[in-house]
Image (cartoon, rainbow, N blue to C red; front, side, top):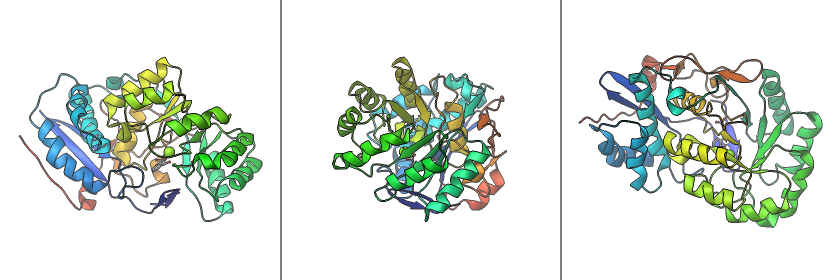
Length: 354
Ligand code: OSB
Ligand code: MG
């Protein structure tokens, strides 16, 4: 994969944990979106493995449910480990859509037939490299460009990007790289007419963000601290930001994501679908979720080929010249796992049965 750098580090390759659930002939897939190391959140692929094996699998195996949201309910008693929970819960939704022969996006309550796409562009080795990357993605049709920033790769870089691309819809993501002591720098970004600044302050903070939002014009978008409906409600009540990034893994799966979406929709807070460098299963789940009506801003849901030489699904996710992904109108996800390829690159496997 092509490297991807944020304020918390560089990712060069991904180990991906997939879940697969069987019930009466129907099969559902899930993807755990955690990174290898606990830099974005506390979870890692290895902690997720243990939690799925020792806690989540025993809860779901052999059980019946009328709606997959019940699975999310069973997992509520678990503190943290949202990405592990999502990997299992989402496979249950996926399987239920298959079993009922309907599209996953319809099972979720989605309505959009195509979804607007943006890209997230990591920190590069040189400013020229960044401009070149942006040029490529703008030419590909993407409807919003987001660049990663960190101290030392912020004001001057954004200024250069704005001078070069005066009219693009541009946002920035700091992944928690600043504190309120950086208020002057953060205020100075107002001149660039950014669509939003994503997670400028601490990963678990909604209090300082509320202070900051009072002092800057640019809309703050919260990412890292949005782990549940409850914290989302508090952040919105405190006016800690005006936009919410919903990530399926970070919130623990489809049921919580739908609840957060509904709450934001009722409160006129735009939401968009964040990404975690997902392979095809996670990517297709993000597409399904982005069809819900409140996902009004372009998400970080982009073409498979931006990250992977060969994705694990067929067809790979593609984005049209206008920057939209057409939502497959078929039962399930609409992107089939390449079983043989997955088999070939699998290094570890565990099977549980009732
Ligand atoms: O903050 O949105 C983020 C990737 C890994 C961890 C955190 C983030 C990201 C991205 C990539 O921005 C979005 C994508 O999957 O394209
Ligand atoms: Mg982010």
